[in-house]
Image (cartoon, rainbow, N blue to C red; front, side):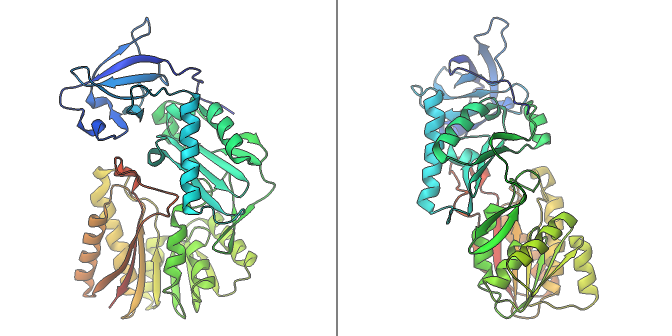
Length: 412
């Protein structure tokens, strides 16, 4: 297991002075100080360079205290701010307090619902812990550091997490591309305790799912769609359902078991995901869901071309835009998908359409649906506009956390 170099103390090692008129977002408590906002860095070190991973203060060009955070010369987010109180040290007490607050938030939400359930315990900026994601799967924790600031304090964070949660094991998940951007080399491995033998089974709304803590997507499952799976199932009774980009069968099994769908066709491009989805179907004794390996666009084209009809279609594609520069391409892809889906629905059909691209705003997505309505000559009514489950809260000072959109629609 490879960790970023550990940072042992909370001493302030330097000061970053903002350019004139660049402090407003941080007085509004936004945690990201980009390199373009910094005028200069006055470091304590003899070599004049701030130590990556060390604590640093941020001031205005006039010397007013703005916030205290952690520096990384290799990231475009040069400083991640963790406190706006000049008297608060980023010491061991601070990190434990933030973890306790995050866990208390999930208890307030009643999550996880059962001892064998799953929930996100820490959601980065939303919990004042920029660069840290922690998910609970039954008796196990999965830790995903997305910034050097938290990667360099991994041992300390895991120590507090094990004390607060008493898990059987703590697993590290790593996004290699993100680690490279942050300049911290990490390898996925066991951090503490034990790894479950074979697939771990968790339960969501009474449905069992096999989870691969070390090799699945995200940290093992798409926990952000938990409540959307249950809510969309309310519209599926006696319907023939198409679930595109089904991954391990969440929407499909929910439609069958919670929504009493007549039948479900579930499609995903990943053969491994479809194998797990079939195993989940067998685990729950479901017999009316058919799983198929296939590309999203190509499968929809084939179904439309063959004259197929479904009473409900679920679209939960992967992220199409990693930033605003890719927005136009993403919206064209969403338009094509939703146009195909609408073509498969009869009047009165249900469309559940999702986007996990944070750069696509709800207004962007609704405008795209308006374009689909115009081109197909079909009226689209939005019945519900939804986001992520409450274990993925949104901090109003950092709306970048509000990435997931789920619209439940009726197509006339």
